[in-house]
Image 1 (tube, chains in turn red, cyan):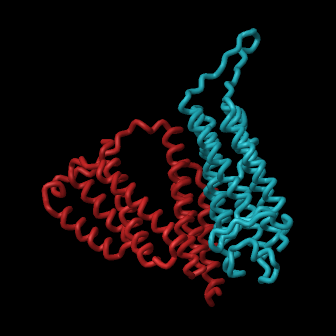
Image 2: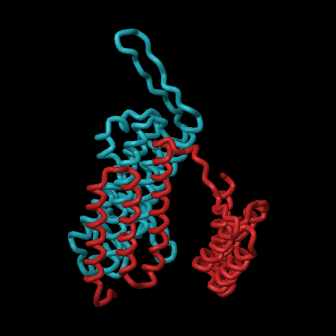
Image 3: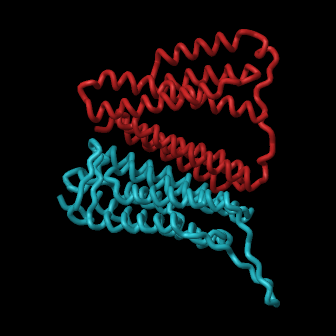
Length: 201
Length: 218
């Protein structure tokens, strides 16, 4: 089940975790503690990754999501408790980038590559391209279309899972549906995050 | 198939994740369900401050949106504890426990008082640090036994899980469950918002009771 070097890997991850916890114990500043706790989260993913199986790959995602959710919650509490909420967040305002066709070219390369990869990873890469485009351009107008696409792809994804459960003989169609659904879902969701970040300015 | 919690009354199968309602887990589940319904139905109370040396007293003003948020968090916390007490998969148990931790922090963090938020923040750091032990423990269980399924682990035919790994899981759950420690923070204990804070205590109690059953069977 487990590889030959599992114990050594475990030792490395444990040392990393102990180092992170020691840093946490010494650090007194709240913001630095938040950053350190993010660092401590990485060994916890390391523990899972050490399994080195398909199962590990499937378990890392929920582990990561839980870690990020807690980090978001904590940073929100930090903002409220320090009274930092009314600071404006500015979008990228780089003149050279705004006037040249470079963002369009770069982001279309990323989107095409993301679509070829497909699935979750592809979605993340294609979304990076879109976020870059939205941040570089000044305006973002068609949010409704993005929201609609996000919702529809979610439906496609869920429908694919129902096909898996109730009509297993059409598994190939369901697989393609789920892959495209999660691709569009991740792309639109991350792109929406990108545009809303820019809009607050 | 008999586990530490008794013979399952009802099995709910999702592929290879089997949710088993043994007499033990069923009673915990019903407890969580009843308290979640109570949270949904109950009306929030306001805290009273008495001016010392006089007959005057005043109620603390709590906004509706704050109460809505805390009720949402309390309900989510109830759902997460229901999941944690019946699940048949060790990793799912860890995820639900981490969710209980987030919801517990959310219930108290909505209070508009700097001291309470400070305590909630420190507590959140503990909960986040505890996920390392929690996920690390469950990953090591998978590494030593090759499975995460609790019914299979309970059969006792698999290699024994080291004591340190069991300790990892228990300490991880202790970090997530707020109840024993939040009483140590004075401001958190008297945070206004009467019916919702109960979910902190109840969910911690339930996940503690469940983790004992889980660890005994490993």
